[in-house]
Image (cartoon, rainbow, N blue to C red; front, side):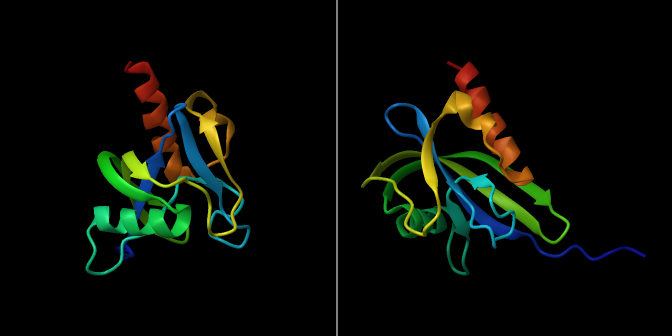
Length: 138
């Protein structure tokens, strides 16, 4: 008997880089799915939104920035025991405002070379790998 796959939760994810080449990450609240782990900001794509609109809305709500330019980085589909996620990941190329965490999570700017020192949810590992690979591309 074939098990029915549940639809994936479509999530827009932003990789925000500052002028020092550091990446913005936040720690998930303990009661959240994958609580206590670090993540890149973003959130669910709502009905009637495209990914870019969702990312702009989420980063305004979560980080207080207005994204003015972005480029696709990667797309990741991951099956956790309890849910499936589709992460639509974008480089945030330019924005206005000062990025900070507005939802009460711990947050920090991390040097790209140090990202692998933080514990991310399994689905986020390929994002870290893409960022690390981009270091070697220059």
